[in-house]
Image (tube, rainbow, N blue to C red):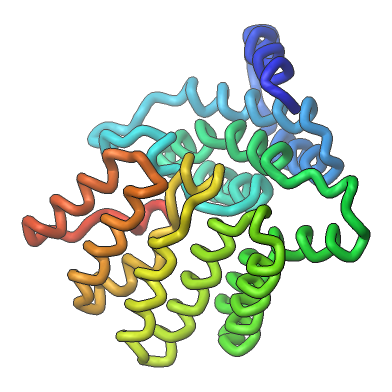
Length: 268
């Protein structure tokens, strides 16, 4: 997908959005299938239908005054974001539904079109790069299932492949390898190492996804809850180098005023 296709889909959106009812689960499944098939046009059409349905819902009273482009960073993949949207819908959480659905077309577009072109590379290199893009999700699943050594192995592999091919995903690989290592360290009780990994991740040069949606804040939230205020402040300031978002200033101000920044709703 290139910008002309995205523009064409936006221009045809009114006809798509005229549907009276939406099978959300069906649309999400169809979008996920199109993403898996690398069908940009179909994936974006379904994403825009889902987004439009969410737009039709009124914001809940007292919703935080955040923009979706600033805060919608719940997952690395369109399929995982689709799961977040369905869970929000099933639980009646209109705020998260709207935030996540607004971001969906951008996530789909980014996933299908920011990936490096590996058609001229050897099959071995192409396989390595494809694996590198999947390793953060592998590591997260390993961490969730309490397989910390496996998660650590994925983090090390991610950084190794990124170092071998610095033109591809380097910024994202640096961030996520340190995020994974930091969460494993914190889980084992090594708070200082976890804080060091957090700061190292913040020194990433960024990537199209990180620059648009910002960093995963899970480790920062966990360290803040553990009293590592200074480390979290340093991390947020480092993130300004690649993420131009006023949300960082809000979080920094909250911490400086003795308040707890609201990191959690991005990852629940």
